[in-house]
Image (cartoon, rainbow, N blue to C red; front, top):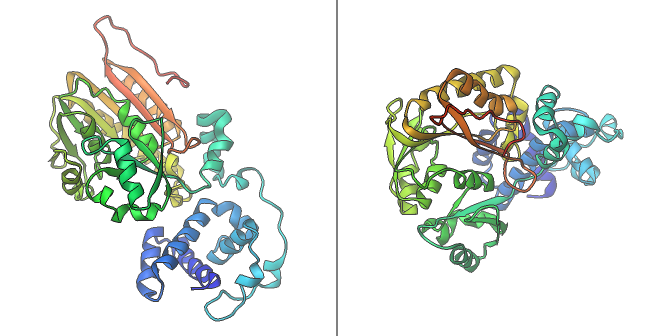
Length: 399
């Protein structure tokens, strides 16, 4: 496909998405109806679509409209791509530019330049402080790809060598003991021997750091209450021999967990929805959230989040925390995680839990922001109060 044809395809996909279809579904639907497109074309078009979604507001300002066509015109302008050579009206190319579309537009400024929705700006500014602009700028760019080396299968040096033998380039990330950042040929990972043999798993740097910050040393029984695909459970199981149980209200999310655990060389059990076992030394709640720390990966979520949906998520998180707390053993730990940057889902949520549930205190808090490479992430480790009655309050800047 020519560059112009790829732009035309991206316009079609974006219009489907803007009409209400999920981005992944729109991409899949287009690919199925366009068998002539090779794997390179599909990858390039996917990159175009996701780049536009990360920068939807600024590209719309430069292109004159929030349509697939307007957004792709805006991208061309922002990337100094000659629109006249792409929008030609030729075969498979988008229609030629109109006089209105040729009109120059002022460079975006303020929240438009940062691709930040107006209603979210005060919430993000309150949570991020001086880092607000840097974080929002980082969210406009593609996220790095990180791997977690499975300590049960290989050392970092061994995994790195195995990947290099297959042409996958990586570098160490010292924030985590098992993290590698992929610097070349990331698309080869899923088909690599290093992956199929369980040497590595794809996992964000911040998620790896959060798991390593958990008090696993004395945990004999560990429950991942909102396990999803089980990535964090597998990361914990690679660090310690214990009795690991995965639970999720939607068991379909865990459908690949058994195969992933076998590949990783670890054992995990699963509990039916609503039947998670109690008496756990560590209960992890990786709660459903806005995903505001992962907007580089799921950019459509930034534009679809609403105040009502945020309120629903906050209420759901509160309910999940209350249900999970009763599963913690008397001397156990409750770990609360989100991939959110918003105080309502993080510090405020923990404060509400402490106010409603006597006998708990904050043992550790970690906040990670998508500036150093990893996603935005929040971790609060909660434990029951000591017998002296001391209670720690959650401070906005504590770590």
